[in-house]
Structures are given as C-alpha cells and as structure tokens.
Image (cartoon, rainbow, N blue to C red):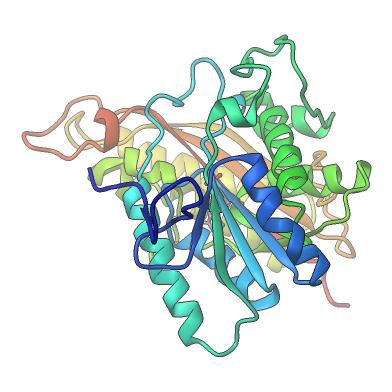
Length: 357
Ligand code: AMP
C-alpha cells in the first residue's frame, strides 16, 4: 500500500499533508482546534463536508459547492461505527484512503485553476475512533448506553424503521464534527434526504450557529444515484439497480400530471416495481436479479411524516428503499461485486416541488 501521508519536514512539528498538495491531514481534535483558531480571528469562513470516504462524484460535488462559497473547506473522512447496526456492513465498508487522497488532490488543483472559487480544500480530518469516542467504542444496540444525540420521532421513521440506530449515530457524529470544526456552513447531499432533515433539525433545536446547505443528488448516466455502496452490486445487479429511481420518476410524473392523492402517486411507483420484479422472476436463476421493496414513501418535507395527499403549495418528498438480493446462481467468471456481492440496500428520493401557481 502506498504511504498514507507525506510531510515537508521531519520531527515533531512536521505537518502531515496529502502527497503533492497543501491539504493538511488532521487526525486529532486538538490539531483541528489549533488550525481553526486563527481563521476565526481573521474572519475566514470554514465549510465542513462530512463523509465516510470511498469518495465519488457525489462527494466531490459537495466539496465544489463548499469551495465556491467559503474560504476554507474541511473534508472529514471517518467511517462512524455508531451509525452501523450490529448486523450491518461496518467490517466490509469500502475504505479507499489512497484513492480518496488522490481524488482530493486532483479536485483541489481543479479548484485552484478555476477562478470562481472563494476557497480550496484546506484540510482533511481523519480521526481514529478513540479520538471521536473518548468513552470507548460506541454502542450499536438500540438500548446501548453512552452520550448520544437523538432526534425523534424523525429518526424512527422510514430509514430509521429499518435501521433503528442509524440516525442516532449520524446526529451524534455530526454534533461532534460540528463542535470540533466549528464550521460556518456544512454541506450534505440530497441523496440522503432524511439525513438532511435530521441535520437541519439538530442545528435548529440545539441552536448551532451553522448554515446547512443541501446539494442535488449526483447520478450515473442511467440515473442510479452514486453511492459508496454501489461497489457491492456487481455487473448483473448494477443493470437492474435503476429500478428504484425509475419507480420514483413514475410517481413524480403522476404528480406532474396533476395527481395529489397518495394512492395514485405511489401506485405509479409500485406499478413499475412490480413490473420489473415480474420480468426478472420470469428469467432463470443464472440471469435474474431479485429485490425486495423496503418502503416507498410520500412524506412531508419538514417532518418526513407520511402524507395522505400532497398539498401543492408545500410539495412533498418521494423516497424509497429496495434491497437487491444476492444473485442466486453465479455464471462462470461473473463479477458479483465487492465482498462477494452481499444484499445491498439502495435508497433514493425525488423532491416534489411546490407548484408555482
Ligand atoms: P457518505 O460518505 O455516504 O456518508 O456521504 C457523505 C455525504 O455525501 C452525505 O452528505 C451524502 O448525502 C453525500 N452524498 C452521497 N452520495 C451522494 C450523491 N450521489 N449525490 C450527492 N451527495 C451524495
């Protein structure tokens, strides 16, 4: 493996930087505070882009937006154990430090060459779990004890129903990151729409002096929302993985045609999901891709509570989750995906805007 860092000098005062760049690598709370303090006095704005690494174009679009509007961008790279359930994929979650470092250095050069940015990537915050959780490895059970931030009932709905400790982990780690970095602005992707509502609620309810900026979902050419977990899919399941987005688009089209009733809007999504499932079920085990629908939702944009009908003056959020099941019978030499192609839960959403009239 390539070296994790380079430094211009040796000795205790040497600064760790990403190779070939001026991007600092900060690993401790104290080092972030030391870096941050003079920027506050100089009134330089700082943005934070929290990530779990395995960077893709979706993450990079957040960083670009942050650099346009802020003097300094901090990207955190930390796979947060508290947001994984005990039976989830913490152990196999893709960790790609060298590729992430290279992507950040490339992006930073792009930002430097483009005259429209206020800032660049100043630092990467890549802490250890003992640094982030001084009391010890965080509990992953619903009844685990510890210092947690809970945002209910929001965190119990939709994603929270399938992943009961997920938003507790997200809210807790974000509160820590916000307290460490003390950013003026934080950048999140619409891809994880419920997460954006959790973070906005956290900021509002705990009076954090932070602006939450939400950037659009970055998609592959065929519409699949980019996700670090897509590497688990393999070729066969990747081809079918657009099914959720297509189902949400069908529901969106129903709303665009004037439907406001929940049954009519969500019926369009379920119709597409059922049709694709029937087509796949008719194929042989060596060819087909089966999936289970976890939920398809039409919810209030502020609370994520289910809506019986969309109020066109307010709009709504269409969202869904499907579980792509492992292939039943592999073909010789077939690429099944990272870690042998386990079940992959895909999420996506489309915002139904308030109508203009
Ligand atoms: P993650 O590394 O998955 O925790 O994601 C870090 C941030 O990137 C979160 O704010 C995500 O919502 C955002 N993100 C992930 N995928 C996308 C995407 N396809 N488009 C835009 N933002 C994304």
